[in-house]
Amino acid sequence: MKINFIESTFPKEGSLVVFGYEEKQLSEFAKQVDKKTDGQISRAMEHDRYEGKFGQTLCLSAPSGLKVNRLCLVGLGKEDELDELKAEKIGGKIMASLMMSGDERLSVAVETSKKAKFTPEEFAAHLAYGAKLRRYRFDKYRTKEREEKKPSVIALDVMLNETDAAATLYDSLDAVAEGVIFARDLVSEPGNVIYPESYAEQIKQLSALGVDVEVLGEDEMEELGMGALLGVGQGSASESHLVIMRWNGSSDDEAPLAFVGKGVTFDTGGISLKPGAGMEDMKFDMGGSAAVVGLMKALAGRKAKVNAVGVVGLVENMPSGTAQRPGDVVTSMSGQTIEVINTDAEGRLVLADALWYTQDKYKPKLMIDLATLTGAILISLGQEYAGIFSNNDELAAQLVAAGEAVEEKVWRLPLGEAYDELINSDVADMKNIGGRNAGSITAAQFLQRFVNDVPWVHIDIAGTAWKQKASDLAEKGATGYGVRLLDRLIRDNYED
Ligand code: BES
Ligand code: MN
Ligand code: ZN
Figure (cartoon, rainbow, N blue to C red):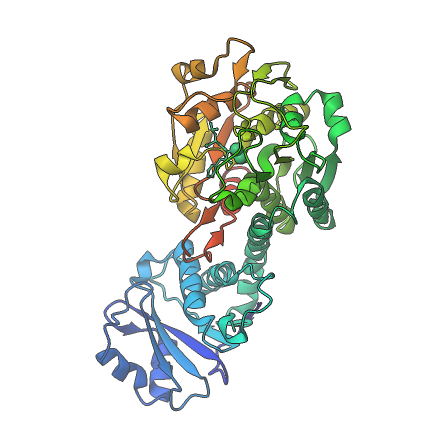
């Protein structure tokens, strides 16, 4: 979809959106349109439940006096309560309600008065950003879908006076949207398309944006002693990879922020095979890594003034004659040994080596990992919040605040010695599962055994990486969860 910021006119095609406020107040442009249509907006308001509340919409087809096919009045609620997120949500709501209309062009007239906390250009840029995120749809394999079932909108004209300022603000938001979209694409692709080798190839694309991409294969990981990660991939026909992405937007002597992602391109459970029903969903088990890749794309795309390193462990968890067995003992890069009780608790094995490697090699200022790690997090938090676990109160609080700001919410769960004991093993230094109780916490305890002094957060996104239901900013399916969250964390706390 093409996004343009243009000066206000009465458009001659497509759909036109104008805004109103609570108690049926109209914006200045809406008043002009009302006049031009001989009071059609006023009349329609009299006969509708529309009151101007946030997100309420009133549409007229073929309005007289205008050349557009459709005229919609959209409520913004109380003007002094508008903020960036609300602007994004309105963009998303407009897109959701009009993208299937049959019109190709969508024009939105933006203005804000002194009452609003922000300028028209900020409102316009965030509205466009929300619209772009909501317009995304993964439909490349629906080759027989009828045209009239596909979204029609291909151009969004945001109309305001300060067009240049809006376009400049939008540029950096667009970079973040591109990161989110890349993450969604990667998560949506099936396991026969995205497997460790093809995934590594996809990530190499980021070098065009100035990201330094390094790919380690099994020999190099063997050399490094990554027995935990390699054990997970040993049953697969695809070679496991560790991919390291570096973005240096700050001075060379600044320690980087590190982001580590679980990239299990398909999780069958291995020899501890998962039940067949619903197993297809496990193509999403690389969602943590996709968030890291999307974040790196966003940071490079908007030339963020920060040093960041992204590390993703790419493996496929398959049962086969070469697969790891329950009871196997593996030695991780840290030297610690692990008894693999259940081959389906594989994500933590991948992260154990990826985390150790990252802190050892890059001495980061902080380290955040993302993983679709446990089904138990869905039982605890559903699809509304991701679970976070941290050794650092300040960092955890920063993440909570960033999550509220972009509505990729996180809820902190505890860590502690009594939980840690549950993963002690009689055979090795630890075992890879802790039993039925507190499944997300024992998984986090396992990860913590591979984290030294660095401020660290683990984000369990098993409930948030994929949604059954559309939201204002995303169609149902892959959400790209984590990209906007971490971009915001960096923007608010760690950029020069
Ligand atoms: N990728 C899964 C976690 C998962 C399960 C995400 C269901 C979304 C829905 C992970 O590798 C896994 O299989 N975890 C096991 C751990 C158990 C064996 C201790 C789980 O959660 O069942
Ligand atoms: Mn598993
Ligand atoms: Zn998994």
